[in-house]
Amino acid sequence: MNVLDLFSGIGGFSLGLERAGMRTVAFCESSSFCRRVLMRRWPGVHCYDDIRTLTADRLAADGIAADVICGGFPCQDISNAGKGAGIDGERSGLWTEFARIICEVRPRYVVVENVAALLNRGLDKILADLAALGFDAEWHCIPACAVGAPHRRDRVWIVATMADAAAVGFQERHRLLTRRQIADAAAAAHAWWEFEPGMGRVADGIPDRVDRLKALGNAVVPQIAELIGHAIMRRQHV
Image (cartoon, rainbow, N blue to C red):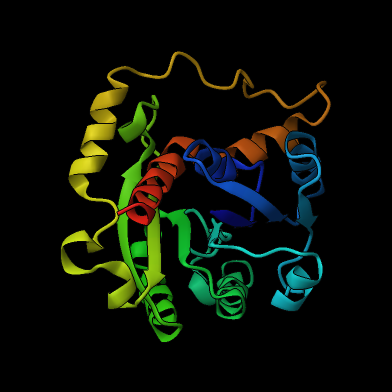
C-alpha cells in the first residue's frame, strides 16, 4: 500500500502507517524545517513543498502512484484557539486542495486528521466533498490517551474508502475501525508512555528549538495512525 502524505509535518502519519506495513512514496510539506526532518528520516522519498502546485500529472511524471492519501490539514481557522474563520479560512481552506488531489489521484483510501472542533466547524463540508468524490467516510474523535499518552489531545480522525459495495464486501465488514477496537488498543497500552520528547518549554539558546516545539505540537500521534493502518491492511486481506 503506497502512501502519499500531505501536510506531512515531521512524518507522524507516515511513521504510524509504515509500522502497519505501508510504504510512503511522497510527502508534501511547506515548512522548510519539517522538510529537512523528512528528508533525513526518509532519504530518497520525494518531498514537495506546496500542495497548491502538486498535481496528479506531476506525481505521475515522478513515477508516484498512491493507494492511500493521508494528511492533517491546517487547523488554525478551525481550532477554538483561533479566530473562528472556519474551514473556509485562509489556512484551513487548504482542505479544498486536499480534496482536489484526492479527486485527481483517486486513491483507495483517504485518512484525515484535525482538531476536535472540526466536528462543529467543517466536518459536514469534508463529508460532503468526499461523498461527491465517490468516497464513503466514517470518523471518530480519538484522544492521544487512548493509546497510552499522558495527555488527552482530542483529534478527529476520518477514514474514507471508495464507495463500491462490490469491492468492499460490504455491510458486515464495512466499518474499518470500531469503538471496541479503539478501546482494545487503549487496554493494550496498559500504561502511560515511558517518556515523551524531552524538549522542555524554553526556546532560547538552543538551535531550532522553536521550530522543533512547533513541529511536535502540530504532529499527529503515530500510534493512532498505526491503529488505522492495521485496520486498512486487515481489510485488504479479507
